[in-house]
Length: 395
Image (cartoon, rainbow, N blue to C red):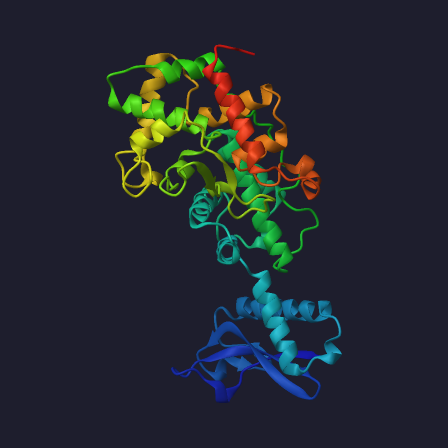
């Protein structure tokens, strides 16, 4: 059985002659030391295992006893210490205490260090974490996070942000606490984020009717930015609702007749079909030719970096105000394609494939162990939607 005591080792003085109080751990006929942060000016301030001749002696003695109790609790919770050497026992104590003194900030950095998320995603995590720690200090020990802290965060931040943003930040906090629990940094009887009221956020209903899509397709304007948005919007629609970030990265010198790409948003998620692949419909080719540069990529914006194409957003806002479609966004092309394909009777699995989703949603993942959507099926789906929008039919 290990025994503990407080001591000062004269032979281990600091360079300035001061001494740190240590916890002596005696186990299996050996002794090892755990250094505390209590520093004495000389050995004269230490007598019979206590600090003396100092104004703060009582406080420091209580601090040392508390540390001694903490080490004893760790030993009591450590199974089979008889099988550990004294050095191994001290290492176990040190590592256990280090895990239990993780702050939100230190645990968050560790979580990002081992995360496989993209750097852009990690940047979003950091922004969300900054919002969280504006209410719950980042120096808070993970083991000290309580449900009340989470509720205070929800109340204080909930009035200043959209429900989906708040939900995303609470989810990140929940993931961080899960990470800490898996790594033994803390053990919650009830995880602090449990019971948080998950607001049901309505899906953005910004898909357009067939006539509205046709209106955009046929819109003529002298404003060059409007014309470019119109063309790129319809190109996204014709290419199965492809996102603008993916559209900007495709080399159309290689994809002359068949579109084949990995959707950026789900490139690191499990997918039965890693690629989105289907034939490029004839309606899309004149637009591709119009905006394709020598490198095969489309000239999407005046900006050279698609991630900072602020002029696209401002163009859309002005365009939708001018034509009277207040809910219009570039994403409306994707939403509209999916809605129109569904209303035309296309199966969810084929639409999922064309959109580049991961395993088709939680409700039908098992189905994909038995079936596989093919590029020919995707081509037929895109063709059906393009034929429909080329007609004058409505639902």
